[in-house]
Image 1: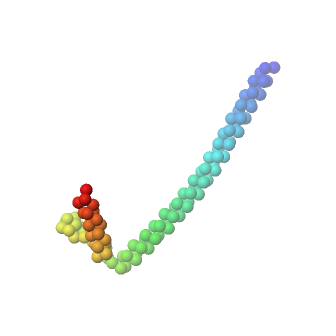
Image 2: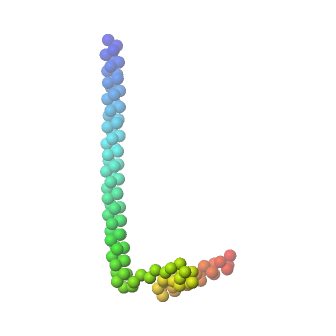
Length: 103
């Protein structure tokens, strides 16, 4: 007589545990779907940026050939900056020197 009550109680406990596991699995599936969607969007952005960079590099390659300096040339003070970049760099160095002298 009591065996039947114990079996029913165990069966109810197992049903509750199974329902809990099913709810958790459903929630995980939803989170995983959301994560996959986010990854797809990010990969699309990365691919688009990569194409933009490649297109830019191709345009730059047609305009100016890249010059690679050796370590000795860099140590001797040679640079591969354009005149505009040299002007900007000089301004940055001037501001740094001013802030260092006031400290």
